[in-house]
Length: 388
Image 1: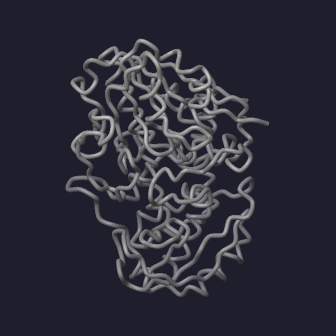
Image 2: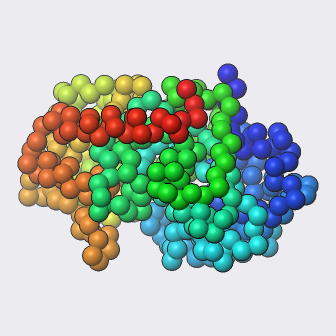
Image 3: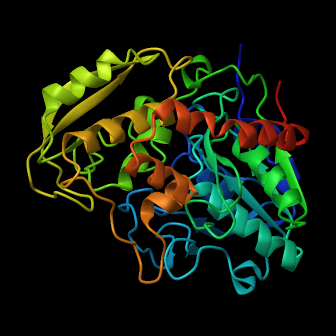
């Protein structure tokens, strides 16, 4: 089966729906057609289309900036048009950024996890576009980890943030286009929104089934394996463990200086979690928030069956067993900014997950507590589906 992204179809139409318009484009290196040609260059060269402005999410238009690194405005070196950063002093376009445009086009590869910030960027952009009357066209892409499985708690009131902008579970099972439709309606953004759906994609399909190339959406999601485990292991940014930043396997290597790697791997493998094996590992992170330059000991996650793997559940087992090794050494990271909530509460979307781990609540009991919210979300998001 041939899977054609929204970008592919726009090119096949010879950019007809953009003709006669001054266009802004929110994208990064994932905004390519299957032959790996940048949509920036293709729109800039399209007959009758004026590419007037570019917008970059976290990691920048080139997706080379480190996580959390603020990015300033710039001018495109070849095209001579402005690049507005949406990760720094602003997280959404200003009305002034949109002045003179007829249409804002969005082409970004999401990875299926709520705290991957491209979703928040799109949601906040829709809010501004709804206020200013700027039409939005989203060129949809597949959810690379599939569209059938949802997992994790839903963001609670009072805990919305840039890693949890809308009330959805951690693993949401939607494409970026579906998420935009959901947020635009449920959050009342009321932007004039069109989504150009992926042709040939079904919810049961993961990235390996699409035939599409994998372009890293950020420096710390280099491979599809990273994306598969990321909905779980990004939670490890909540406790004082290294999530493997600054290694060749970010979010696949998890550890700390005080952990017993062999014991941790043995305890995790004894659980016989579906779709996953754990290998004892030693590594030294050269980036991140904890243990930079310090040898760490822990595990590498080896997913072997993404259809059965539940990465959020696996991460809870990982954090629970790491805490059990040393309840004094294990702790929760301090807020990222003064006056903010704890990172684990923002990432999970609820203080109850942290409280449950501190109370040594069985993981099965924590997971069971999500079911009512997940059942409601399944029904709430169904009207916004674009795919079977």
